[in-house]
Image 1 (tube, helix red, strand yellow):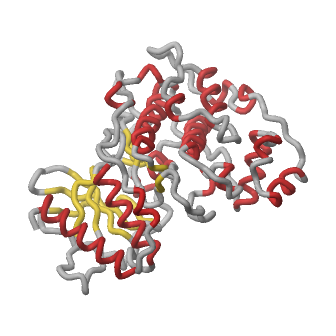
Image 2 (cartoon, helix red, strand yellow; image 1 turned 120 degrees about the horizontal axis):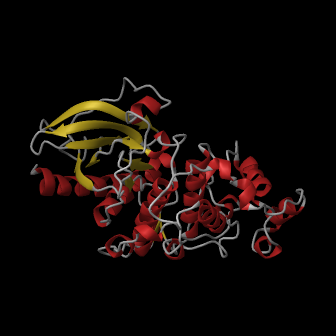
Image 3 (tube, rainbow, N blue to C red; image 1 turned 45 degrees about the vertical axis):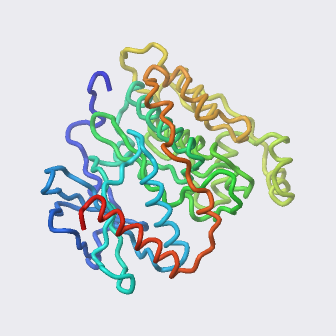
Length: 380
């Protein structure tokens, strides 16, 4: 940020301090000797992450060991997709893959995958609950929008945007990560309900409707609301409760929207109590915002509410697009052409999402890909 403002009060919290899981004693990291592991950053369903120092460059890196990448075809395909996407994407607000590594030298023994990326200080979930003024909120949202626009320019939907998938530094700089659930636009697939994190799941996803890039905009709206309120906006306990929270909080959808749902979904919605869409002045009152004098008059509470209103629109056909969002008064003060309009270097290979390969075939593709990266980046 222009003023170099800190995201936190006092010391920067480490991601490890905010992890709900203890480090698994069975997780064993085996990395090249040029890397010195220093501390745990996190552990979850997708893998364990450690910070390390690269003795060759002196720089700190993050090392993710993928969790059981070969337990089935889905996990192997997800790992391959993430590696290919990280190699293709090139944007200051998207995490950069530095190296990929496996200590196993043959396909027969191949079982471990390590991804080395830039190391950031924390993730966005550690920021939730800290008092943030408008300039910090708008700058964070601007960066997320730029990164997602770059992803969309490659024909890719992230699908799993949430605070833990966005890493940050105390100077408010951020990077989007975790592309294992990303999908190409226009391919024929049905989204599994229990894949995308529930609290950030767009209405059209919950109702098994066709969807496109605007599911990411809904998630960004949920993240922005969480930054403002200091808590999850729509904390559903299951997918039915999630839908009910959406309608009670944001209003019953229009008949035009419901006409595009399945007959069973439409009957369910029509049998629920009607809720008018609320005023966002009431949903996000002045007391939710930190009032501080800033450099940009347009970055204010009323424009924050307007942007939230446009992102948290139930009908995706009426929801603001990422291009429109980046011209909104609440974020456009940060606009730089090289960030907003940075195109993907090469188009994503959409045939990847259509492939139906055996576990052995995915494993072989991964082995070849990782060993190619090792030779190119680590000289191994």
